[in-house]
Image (cartoon, rainbow, N blue to C red; front, side, top):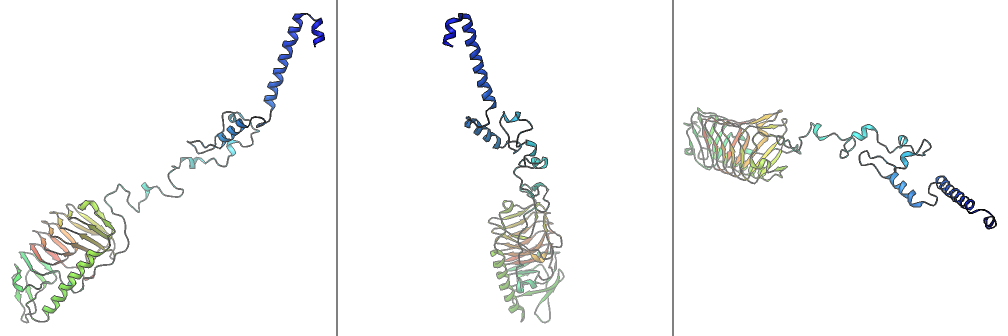
Amino acid sequence: MSMMSSRLPVSVLVALFALAACSDSTELDDGASTRPAGDGNVTADRARATDAAAPDAATGTAVGSASDAGRGANDASPANTDGAKPSSTDAAKPSSQPDGASPASTDGASPTATDASVSEPVTTVMPVNLGAAGNYAILAKTAVSTVPPSAVTGDVAVSPAAASYITGFSLTADSSNVFSTAAQVTGKVYAADYATPTPVNLTSAIGAMGLAFTDASGRAPNKTELGAGNIGGLTLAPGVYKWSSGLLIPTDVTLVGDANAVWIFQVAQGLTVSSGAKVVLTGGAVPAHVFWSVAGTVDVGTTAHLEGIVLGQTNITLRSGASINGRLLAQTAVTLDASKVVAPAAN
């Protein structure tokens, strides 16, 4: 080339150098376009591999780099044959929902967290053993009184108080002096000063009443502080419920369960059933398996209705027109006012 340059005109030499430069550039471009993937470009290859493995946030599928999108039919891993790509039904499934699980909103067997009307199902609870106390519709230590006309179906008793502390019933003593009768009582009336064996029987019943209260109040609770002490309008499954305060029933409460279901309500203070409110049993539930263990006073309002066995550590009052299918077992006094008490079959 040096020999030729000395003989050729300058213009020709410039043209030859330009042609040579163009040829070199073309060879470089051809080499870049035909170079195998990854040959001398490790960083780019790794970037493509990373892009291909990264899942798309919206679909959960592997997504390639922008250059991968232009690959033709010779691509070894076409997107339409990628086994990792979910089907259209999988893509529609919420990511937080486990496979095979039913959505909570369609689970009819149990309430949702926002359904405050129904409590959760609980384990089996055994009934409280009333012992000899279960022989009476009303049993009290200090007094039983009524404003007529009340109606009591079952026996009535006081002990250690005497018969003089049973007031408003117009008692008629039996010739044996073991019991009395009264127009307002479908059953017999007993007192600690009646003839043998009444005093012994009543001592046994009073002792059993105390043991029943201790048993009921000592059961391990399945649920505590339900409704912050206000259970009006609720539907309750069987179980042991406990409150460290008083308990208010301002509106109807429903207990749902079969004949073997048991409810125990442990109340650290008083129980108040507002006037007209009712406790309702459904599903075959029986009052003999409902227990109200109340440390404070029990006040059942005018025309209100209660179901179950009331184990009161103090006094129990049923106001005008109030009623109960159950038993009133008080460690002090029971007061009725034209009220109705129906003892259930023994539990």
